[in-house]
Image (tube, rainbow, N blue to C red; front, side, top):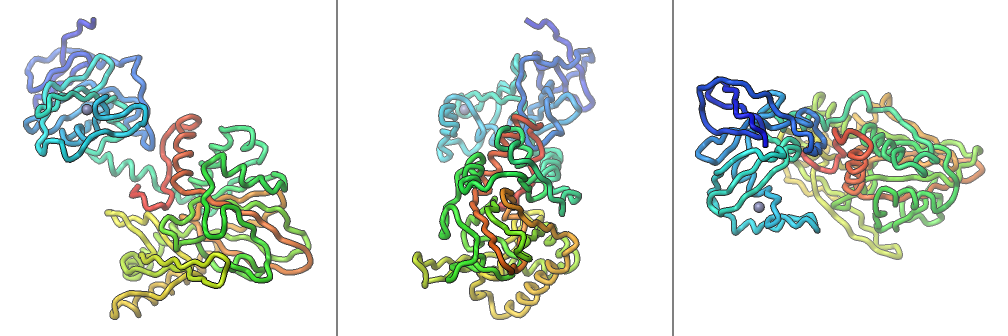
Length: 448
Ligand SMILES: [Zn+2]
């Protein structure tokens, strides 16, 4: 039993107290109680380091029990609304630990929610009673810090997920034997893709199953109209432009799917030295879009608001497809930051914009295309060697291919995995091998 009963008062009547002894409301007595750091709490923070491993040692209930301010031991404060706490309650009644799912019926909750009996427990958790329901919830400090939304904390979190411009245009690499044998090396590979948009895997074998086996270490393979595993080599009657030896322009793969492929793998099974050309070239289109906004704000706005048509209509094949999706090329969040870009001039459908928008749309569209082709100093060039794999984020990078010719063969095998499966795996490994913080934006439309 802790016998400390002293408090530090602060200006404004807020009391800071040790986590074992709390008080709510104003007080005039000044005495001393240093913040007590519990040794047994287990704080898990992700994506945000600002408040990590902080201990709550003061609380103040305000606004008639509709809000509580939690004071952390680094001078930071987080405000939580009663409604937020109620909806995020993880008590046995509100949360099924076996399935990891909420069991709250939203329509049954009171419309007005007030807190009472608010305290910090012996193990540092915030405990509150929801007045209208005779229901108690407890919240670990790590959970509260990770999800704090007040006092500029959202802006800090958003900032931490932005791509570092110094990472753009750099091709990192890992060794196949490392990622094959070590989960920590796999984490490094996934982190490289997160920071740079891509990663080279050197010195693998030409085992035809290699890329499939590797992808499965990260997530399930994403099946699609070209098959779960597909080969890129010249065909007599190609079902896709990729299956020729011709040059290919900048594009993302399959943007006519609502959830287009996220992470793309290309494994080189054969690329004879006698073949000329055939390099794969990458460009960070999210970075280009931000620059496009500076250079052409009006056109940027057009691409972010007028829906373009992505379509794959191809009846003359074994498995006919007719996929059409309309959406703006650039997708923004509320702060007008770019959260996704869709680009592939080879699978466009007929534009369905308003009459007065058509001309200005195509001007903006062409200007953006010109911007892409004027950024070749930022282009990353890869000529795969047999056994190598290049992995990239198809939601963030566009890629193109040089034409190839001459005697000899070029044969790649590819697979995709979903972007959210990738991000999930990276987050899990980051908690295990990294500091669990600062997963960068992956271009999947997530707001930060
Ligand atoms: Zn509950």
